[in-house]
Image (cartoon, rainbow, N blue to C red; front, side):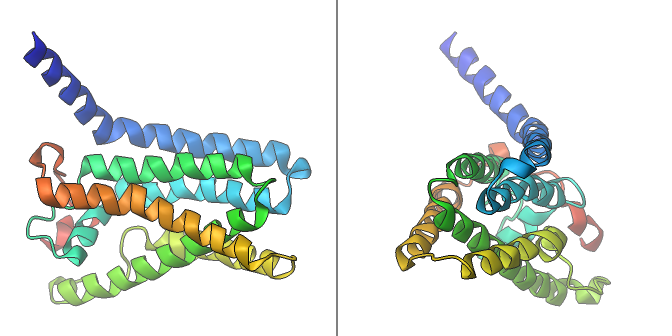
Length: 228
């Protein structure tokens, strides 16, 4: 009986980590968009910025995981995985990373009126880091596959960085530069960003690098199917 229940729980988690969590995060983006529209006149500029971040994350996730998809593949290859369909990023770590970030950014948006400068610093840092990482991976994957027909530096997730997250970083920087922000505020925002990276990216990936759980392995390479 216990073994059967455990199997059912694993099956349910597998189903959730496959597609269901994606639908949940896309819905959260739609909800945040409506909150931004309805509350636009009453929101502080800093809160608008963090709300936009919570809207752009689902867009970014859509590009990475649904269309064209395949971000995990380039990410795992970049980390040096010998089995990029399995580790260090798998469907479970992928869900933890993105769901964790989205929920954190929604909470951050709610708290923004009390920590405006730190919150906007998070938006600035996140956009810059994501744009840098995806641009770097685009170059890496071009070098890897240019002899198989890859003619651009595009990599899944890059478009929403170049045309969304980076612009939000510029907007946030422009706003914070005009404010009486303290160095401690900026450092707090950097600290929050590091905390997000450690808790939702580094720790899950480190655990799966050790475990190499094939139970949550990916089955398709998305954008990179045509180059393999």
